[in-house]
Length: 442
Ligand code: PMP
Image (tube, rainbow, N blue to C red):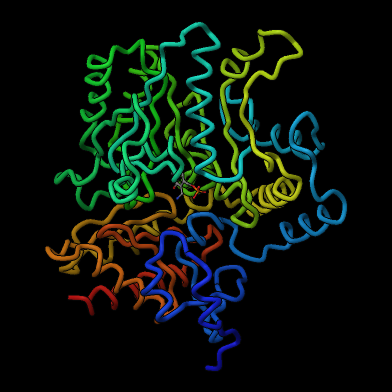
């Protein structure tokens, strides 16, 4: 096929690409030039089925009319609204709408521009909250091995992806990690939430004993760890973390950057598990990946703790030039309209049996070590190769790309997390393509 776009060598070199093997990519660039519903269009005219919702974010699929119209209308009306000491109506409407989407006391919304910023904001809020209540000694933060909370220094520090951390020195002080929940033998090939490993939550008890719980501000976890390869929490694990946090006055932060907006078959993991954290971090699916946007949703008690000082004082010295940006709010409104009108936030539950059967149909392949799934998300872990563990899955990524399927690979795991509008025939295509690819790697 003829290429619709080519780049000069100078253009290729000028762009330092994130989380990419730049030298490898630039020797054989892959260019996306269009997108509609479930597919990307490549520069050679081929169609690529989006098996990962862009990057776990385009939950309503691509080129959705409600979102396009909302942005077009907004840009012609109010393109920017000064972020500090000023507001525009849509950001208040969106905040209320989000607060109504999550249960319990989670009623206050702080806007950011990304998942990393949401995590950073949540961690700073947690420390400042305790400070505002006269507990300024509560500054320690607990994360988890294999956790991913973005790339800024706070998120990186509480995160536990060693490759992401090792170039950047000592990171934050006063941070510790619980063990991850990955690789428990008895959980291999579990369907949905795995049975074994609740005792790993007792790591938090151990860290409380070690550090003195009255010095711990917050615990942050992804209810389901996506970036480390779709790691599901053992049954009862998150409930136990909630209990321990309650016992010691520690805030529990759920990083729902991936699990928010329908990924698990419920609007949020918070609802799926029936656990109310003190703070939820969101981004990605909030504006369908169309315009950068994140939101931190907190319990009333957190907001209220900041509201006791002099009335003319800024209560929380934190924010971004683009917090609550009108274009992002319009995109989010169009996105939430689409989710609601098409029932997408629960579509993962409707399709989950079909999805689960399709994913586990790969279990007979000798290279497959484990399969994990929930809602419309799956991780297919391959047996590691001793020399270069991730090379085999990267080959899988390239082969899938050639076969017309976009997948995500991390460590030894192939992840799938498509737009929630996926059809059964497309699920069949994704897993049958993967079957052939994994077989060819053997
Ligand atoms: N938290 C989680 C759980 C994520 O999966 C991600 C992104 N994959 C982030 C935070 C960071 O989001 P962003 O890339 O938008 O900064």
